Image (cartoon, one colour):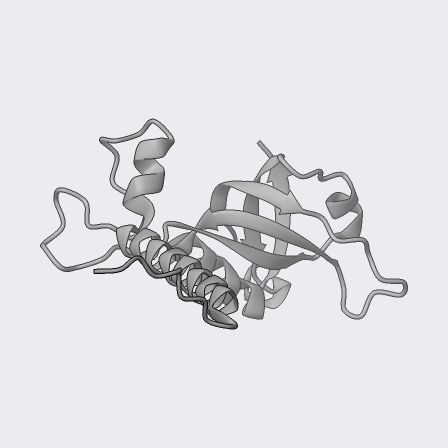
Length: 160
């Protein structure tokens, strides 16, 4: 068979580059899908905590297939005394106390213990409602009780 010169096709190089770009994009997409499918388990192992259950993953005592909800949430809470809120800083721990109306005896009860202050928004002049807002981080069940108490009672805080 005689020796032939290489066959050159116009635009072939451009097509190969385009296909290479598609292949790289496809590889990135497949890698991203694999990382999403792996979920938080890989990140927990990467953080040096291989034995702990990942958030949202069933713990050992939970029945298979049931997922636990996030344990800690942040909740904005209006405290009746705005001057007290000005004393708070992010990172402080507080107990939140709900006091009923004076007409009903004014009984006070602790609604949340050891809540973490995550944010103290700057107050609005003049305040829209009595008191001042503070953002607390606490357990989901405690946050539900706290928000429920805030609808009918005045809230106060004490530093822990």
